[in-house]
Image 1: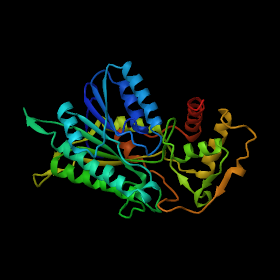
Image 2: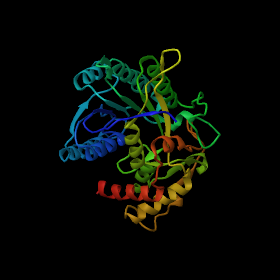
Image 3: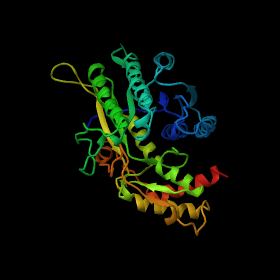
Image 4: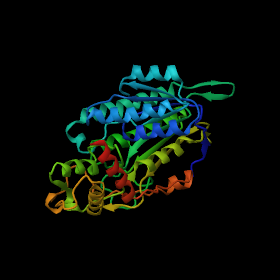
Length: 365
């Protein structure tokens, strides 16, 4: 167990990058509802990786939650790759907690668009680390500055790992996509900065996050769009895929708990800092066969009135070979999260996909 410093999030200045992205928006809404004071700064470049209207929709939900909250919310449009912008925000707001969710996502997109991954996931993350480093001063016997950096990693770091479930103790030195390589690099950079500059940091390896207003490039969402248009969905590896699907509310619960428990700063026998650093999996803990998952999705789409009961699902499926950069199975060992924070994901795919289908029916009216 990594010793933790408990942090009361109330009254703190919190930076959430990647809001109004999918996870970021849900996290900020949760914080606005739960906290009774403080400041949240959301930072996102609102890029067109997918339709910006969806981010604008999520931002409207964030702003609506902010109107009802005693927590002040500020949205800044910009990129973490802009060092001057990042530094100016740290200098102005003196953040206590930083949650870095901003990143270029997607395994397949990284094959043809490597530049944006280097810019956001490496240069951008470096800027966040530098800003955290430079936030510190020492006065009255205590540190001032960032008390906890929480950042998004990914289950993609496990690559073609055949040992299941995936454990944070596993060797992850052979990524099969540039996206995975950038996420593993984030973990290495965070570790070195934790060691050199005593920055408490926690990386979270997310496993296939889904839910209402999610990313349209994710399978459940893109498959829904395709079926609604009468198209054919492709099931890669001939449908022989398993994913540890994790509902967004479970992800947010895990992130909030982790934010409030930072790795403790300690000094080693050599007089130097013991890196206040940790990495955890957040996954559903129950890998689902892709064919079973799509069957539940189809049932919920019919139940929500999005598709007719007599829809020919079999006629709109195509079994195809594995695609580059993908892996056949993801399966999280989340015992560390349960041990250190008392949390295990609870929401199954039936409930999660039902919530998504209900939202989709309303959103596309």
